[in-house]
Image 1: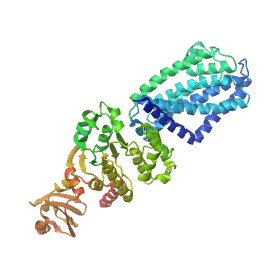
Image 2: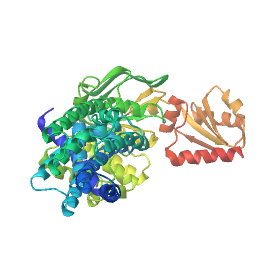
Image 3: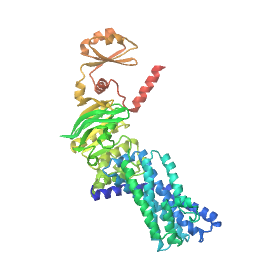
Image 4: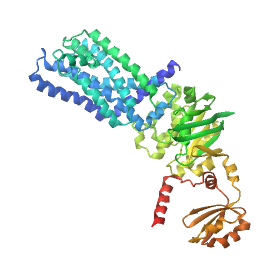
Length: 251
Length: 321
């Protein structure tokens, strides 16, 4: 298969994901307001008792950027289940594209969706005076993209095994909540009991949140580059599993 | 030269033999019909030939490519229009077609022109930028047929192309399919359970029942294969057991107050038949049509679509009262 064909195939699938995303306004709106809602409630509620050595709002805002990525990336896998249900998946699978190409195209579409949502939240953050600067925003974006790649892949992996959207919702929430709650988005991880700390180390979002904090509030357990490398390592594994899952996928 | 060659193709789902060792050859530029009742194995055959389903055993080549060892090459050269809608209804017709053209590597400069041509052929050019969810069932089907043609495949598979469409749209789609086969030398394989479609549209027809080909040939040949005439009698007290014993009677089908009797030389034998049949309200003699061909090879009448099936259920329900 020529490079041109692969590129067109990837573009085709991205084009479709992007068009669908733009038509589903309710999803865009809820995916932006949900983190803001959490942010306001947590910032005001927990903020009164939290002692994180910094402004609590500035501490958790990167966490909610990660939350947007976690939720929308994983949710993207539901589209795959939906495609199967409306038989659109047949049209894609009968096309002369390799499954790897199909996977990459869909994943890029999902990353684009997640990033657009995160960018809107980022703009809100800048507007309300969160510690984003001309220098750290590019690093924040790189980290969010790295996180989105892995989690979109995870969503697609789950989606490729699921027959019904309800089943997907159930299984993906088992992934979404631990990924979010154990990532350190809401509270510092250093005072956790040892066994729980081990679990947080298996969560790619932990490193993403840590990396985001390192460039925004300059409080982190690892240097930014180390965090980024670890998130990228998760990406490599999840992409490999994702292409395998797509290659075994039946109608 | 054979565009499609199928040898002992078999698909088994557990104990169920969905397709049971089918062999056939389809020539270039031919409109070939797979006719059979629901569950006969038509769609399964199509899914195997389009490489979406792996055969349990047997083999087939499409445009010279083996469906098991060269699935990508097969998929490159075929177009597929599925029985169930398989477009994204949030997208417009244009977007659905563009997505398809990109996936099938249509040259970028040609995409818009081809989309315009294809939609023009199915009379949807004016609705190009409407979301598919605003389409009727017939419009959506036409859009999907147009989509299947965008990459100008050598072979086009159509799974029940006119199911659920009104007679006018159906005839329109037939004309269109004929045009494709003759002008572009496209080979077209379609499944159908409409007798009229098989009879009028297809160059050759394979009748499939229980996963096997029970008859294969041009519709005219198949009709000529049924010798004799058909006599339809109506009457409340037909004595069919006596009729069955007559030497010139081949078969008797009973349907409520109606009986369809296959006879040799109706002109000569009709008086004798009527003497045995008891009180008859009406008599009709006709030469065999495609329905009779089907009845002959499968032993059952086919129901033309859901409307007729509902009609049939109603008749049965009334008969029980």
